[in-house]
Length: 77
Image 1 (cartoon, rainbow, N blue to C red):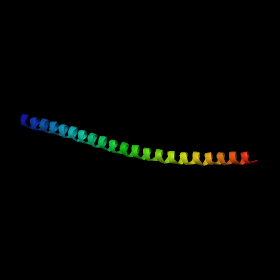
Image 2: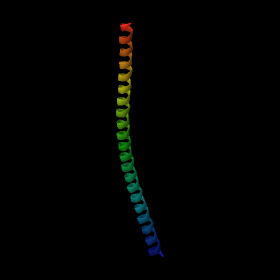
Image 3: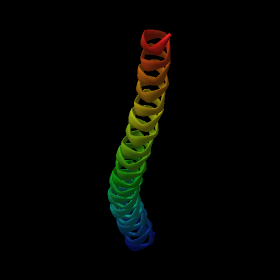
Image 4: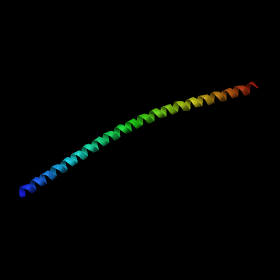
């Protein structure tokens, strides 16, 4: 009977240790996945900001050209 309890206790300890190791592994994998997703998000955000900056600069250039054209037209009157 004592041997049976010892085996049962050993088995419970092994299972608890395996569960703990598995949990640690899952936590490591989740951390790596989170890091990868954040890097992808940061890259997409930087690319979008660059694009929007170019669009903004183009719009400013167009408006500047329109204002300059209006100024020349008014000066010519």
